[in-house]
Image (cartoon, rainbow, N blue to C red; front, side, top):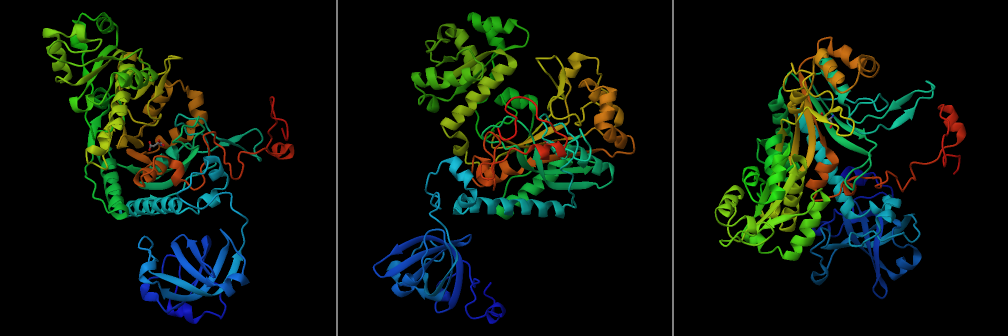
Length: 608
Ligand code: ASP
């Protein structure tokens, strides 16, 4: 825009812009310019009219005299073309907060390019419009500078990641959207096939199998900005369709995948945020993450680590704890909140906020202790006097004035309760922020291979069924060993958020068959569902592994947002609906017949 050649080609009365609404500066004073944009605000100053014209790049103040103002009618959100002269503003009228705040454009010609009725809400970052209204009129919502900034951040971030993968020799390859189910643990979205009556495509939960086939095909290094679809019950921070940066590489082990991503993320943070992040990232084994932080995605910027108190509990006088240690898998653990924070936790906080939080994660109550020489205070005090108290302090690493919190019961529940209490206290006291570490990355490794489904007693994959076991020769008939078998899956955690997961894969047909078998997928089902993969694995598959990062979460967090909706152009609601285009929507019987689908059940009648 505004090159001399472009200026020379302009016809008189040309409505097209010479500059954007964020471009003009004091050095442009005297120039004749044309701006295009939306009417952001309009002020009448007794015979002189000021209009703030807005586009993606900024706001420029336009001045209209009375004659011009009375010759055109427009109001908020009209689209105008304004031609005029750039004028330096008087010193007292300069607006230091606006990039264009030193000038204004004195209009000579105003043309209405597009009209608008009164908009459903004002295009402003300061107003608090109901979410449903914002989503219903998303095209208007997206005119807000903050949302535009978010989308631009996302665009820059994803493009920087792309470039980094290209520099590392990765090929960007698209995989099908109309495909066959790839299990990632969610329900599939199904699409009926018109030309194959009774058959359905599934939308990909991830490109997992295709990217592995690309490795078998010898493509060596693949990546894709991949749309994935998972039909799950939504939580506030999930969307039924989302975007992953999906990648896979051949002839590698874990450390090669880690090094690749450490480079991608450090290059991207440097390019998009001007930040040097520390590489290599920390590594933490899954078991250690659970035992120290009660989570497989801990925020490691602050302490409050969990402490094992089983030995103390076994010999203590407090029967509740003692009896738990006698049960198989029973644990007693605690955390010690340092005195300076403990002093800010009242008895009421303990009995309500903290206890309720513990209960919401399955605890029956919350035992606590404020250690002191005389045994201290709290339900644990009478069991923690003298030698007993010293031993308990030592196990907790606690001092006088600290507040110790306890959980007892089955291990998984104890870890969860204390892990969540730790998170709550971290949030309550802003501990992560106080650490001064803005971006904390962590690889969590050594996840279990299989988890037992308590309801039906079956083994399930902890990651997905294509993940390699740490031991290729694992025995499928040894339940105790299977429960302890490690997988070669890993997660990347940033500031306590799971950014992505991946694994070294099974590249041997026989191992893949053994894993499927263990998951209850018999030979016939294997052939029917995954025959093409097994066949490929039998024909020269290289060892390979990969990873996928959730781009919605990564770009939201780096833009300082805690909800991915704010960085998704057209998000869905918590019930997976698009309020703007009213999807999902009913279809006519004729259209259903075409795809060989019949209505069944109540409430499914046409037009109901
Ligand atoms: N396909 C996995 C996922 O979507 C990621 C991976 O294993 O690479 O979570």
